[in-house]
Length: 304
Image 1 (tube, rainbow, N blue to C red):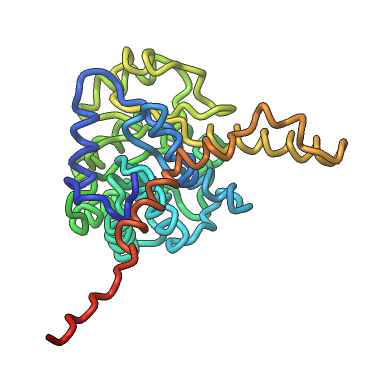
Image 2: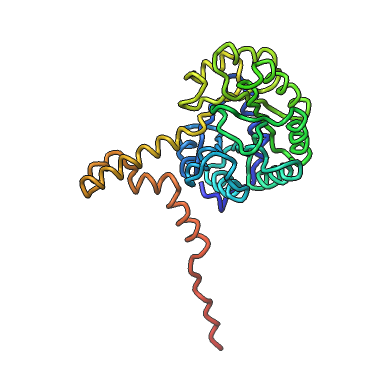
């Protein structure tokens, strides 16, 4: 697919809503850059997730709210162009207060995002599976969601609450209800620690629910089918692609350093031909040739 020549499509937010409204659960892998997004699409996935933690780490930064809006928008745009799949974008705490949130929504929607995820932490925010997270008040978060709703056109709003760790399941449920009243389209209860908590959320919150199956965190390893049985409509693997890629790069560099050659790693590499096929190299060349083909000037008629 060559995005330069792509026909206009229905708004990404509408397409995402159709996906999570179907029977079953929507499995959404994290894609920390455009090539990962292409590979996810080729594997058969129908939607993608851009994690602030994965993007920050890929830039050598900690997930502490250091990422800038311009950087997030750039990666959002490249992923949406490359994969043409509905993309949920992690916008952390909204990069500020009410007006900042409204700008985030407009910028991300213009870049092609299908949904924005906002969370109820204070800055500096932390990974949702770490300790001692500080939260804004329910009213403050509800005001941000209301602002996002007013700014969006078709972008969907996913409200994440990190309250389970500090306020218990009751507090997280109360916040989820308030966030829905403020205009959220879906709820993301972060870092739940057992199956019963997921089941209770699904019983009591009548909205699409998103689960986070991140590795090495507070949530046990559940499959997509198990989350579906709990009553959730979406599940993300936000940082998995980055973790796999980072380990592979470490092993490559260790091999080159130890042996002065990458030859032993060739069986684990994507070939040049496979890469070109994935990114549509030939399609770009064909598009260029079809537009920039040489045209021979017409020879004037000879005088009679």
